[in-house]
Image (cartoon, rainbow, N blue to C red; front, side, top):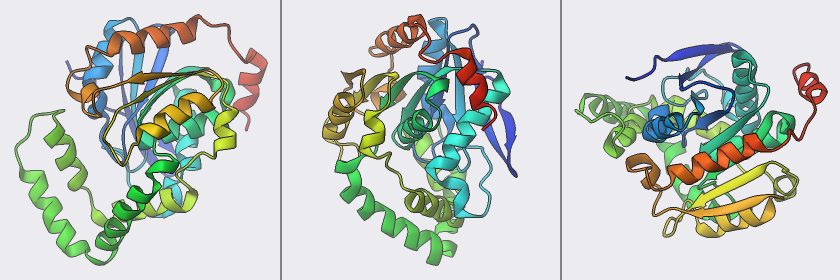
Length: 284
């Protein structure tokens, strides 16, 4: 059964999330750029079946979350604050973050901003230095279309909403992405670009949390060189190869045991930060 959608007010807008499983060992899932949380649905079910408390989150501009006016709502720093606000609301002093693509960058930004809240990281296909040329080539047309071609883009979005689809399938995720208001999508993209999508390399190297990096070949937006480089940069990194970025969406069974085992190991480690440090972070 699909878990109910819940919302949390952060500032003047609502983020959305759902929960599966229960227990003290939690993991928060962050989807790819503006994707709905159901992109992780099958993986979330698989991890919950391993005894984990799984929270699937949609930051502002993603899925069913609000899409407020103003690019400043969509910077990496703002997204990190939204993650921390959700942890506070759920009473999670610490958690493991699992993010895909832009969600992976949000996870890294959160680990830099609030390292005492992070037990571990699962970083799938982050968007880092080697991806920048391709991302720039894709971002410019998107910004122009959303800003100056909004009437045409809205027509395409309206058609996308009418197309029948199978929930959680790759066409469903892509059609959902296309169906957003193009002006808000352009503004959100502007926020990510203006705030800086990259967590600087020197800050990544300071991340002390155990980190599992998942990557794949033949993807110019998520080059394997970035995945392997991140696994080498962080202090306690491991690399896990996937067949493609689609694998964990369609058939997570092969990799789910390794991911669940890694998360369990993160919770088996002694806490890197004492309770006083965690309490102090709430007052920031």
